[in-house]
Length: 223
Image (cartoon, rainbow, N blue to C red; front, side, top):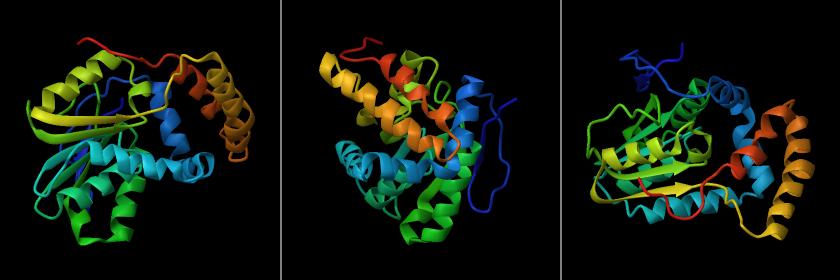
C-alpha cells in the first residue's frame, strides 16, 4: 500500500498516511521520474520554466511566508518559491511519487543554495492534505490537477489549508474549446510528444496526456 511520509535531509521516517490515488497514475509518475525534467525542457522548448515563474509570481509569496507546492514533482516550483520566501520562510513540497521526491531531494542537495534549506519534502495525498486548516500563505500546483482522481476534492483541500485572503496558483495544460487548436494539440501529442517519449521507452506512459487534457475542467467550478 502507498503511504504518506515526511522527510528532510537526511531522510528520517516521520509518519504515514494512506494516499487516495489511482495506483496506475502513481506508478506512471514513478516510472517517468528519471527523464521527466529532460522531456519537459525538450517538449516545451524550455517554455515551462517561464510558465512556472509566472505561476509563482501570481501567488504574491513574500519573505517569511509559509508556502506549499502540491504535486511538486522534481521541485521546480518549490525551488522558485524558496527564493521568494527566503531563509525566514518555509516551503513544503508534496507529491505522491516517491521517485519524484527522491530526485527533488537530490537536486536540493546538489544545488546547495542557502535558501533551499527551508524546503521540506512530503510524500502525501493531494486529496487529503496532512496539514491543519489555514496553514499556508500561498499554494502552487503545477501540472497536477489533471491527474488527481477527484478534482473538486483537491480544490477543496487547497482552500482548507490556505489562509484567508491568500492565493493559490494552479498551472496546467489548457483544454481549448476551439476545434482547430484542439486538433493541433492532439497532433503534437501524437506526432511529437509520444514519439520523443518512445525513445526513452515511455510511449505508453505519455499517451495518457490526451485523455487527461480532455477530462480537464474549464471555466468556473463551484465548490
